[in-house]
Image 1 (cartoon, protein in one colour):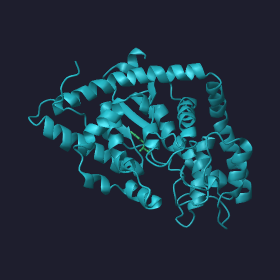
Image 2: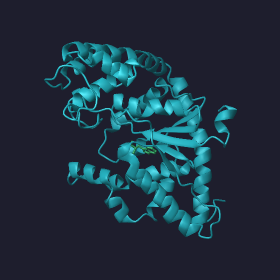
Image 3: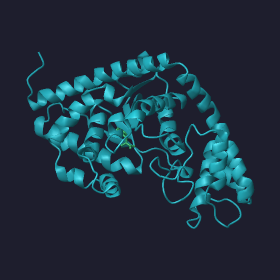
Image 4: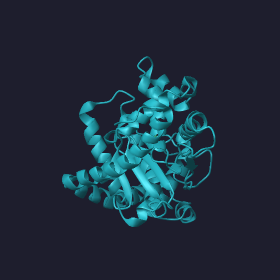
Length: 345
Ligand code: TRP
């Protein structure tokens, strides 16, 4: 780590993505691209949350490879291991340990009312694990272990961050450090990211681009080859109106694809809107496909380089684990002491 990255004056940020399936344009434009910018001003921790990936039925033959490819994609997107701590959640056992301690102070009904749990549980019918209910407590452990000042969150994760704050404040600090002594856990703030990067599905402009949509044509993954990108865009949902525009509630697909074009071609929204105002879908789609292919090209090249050198990637994850474990262990010990556990001799 460089000197600057460890200076305590830099507020700390932590975030993570699950290694379930390939990362897509929504993950990149909505999250990881912003992480890259945060590296200049924050002490940044980025983990691949593999323990979260097993809260729904998973394929053990894919978990390790998906974890590695997600880490490589972080780096390919511009996360710089010299400035950021990049690691795998399950490599730092403090995540599971703090999760248990937090479990025992978190009211069950706080978890039962989580919107994402309700939605996922509904989809899965009878086959819901205790881990799925516990998902937000594990996420709270991820955040609280690192004394994160800020957590970049989209709309769908706000409730989980709120839960992490409530656990830290009401269930740990208020109970176990009641006299306004030094609080045990830092209470994190949400970091609301600049808007304009909410990427919607290619097949339905009103729902978010998602890894779990069974229709692969609904998303462009970061590793899709040019011909796949072109085909998915060609088949993307359109409407019968001529000309692209922003903000027309009747035309969510136009808004989404024009927004993607602006981001991927590096145009301002005004510029993109003016350029495409009288363009038919037939001319717009190849333009968008071209912009997407070109925007992903350097990232894909870098990814292949990283994957061709497994030793280096492994070294990055090992160094990340060591730095992460140092911070996490200190927090875990603080919580253990506050809860009254016997010291490890
Ligand atoms: N639940 C987050 C998501 O699906 C992933 C996540 C796990 C996370 N732990 C985290 C995000 C800690 C931020 C901080 O997007």
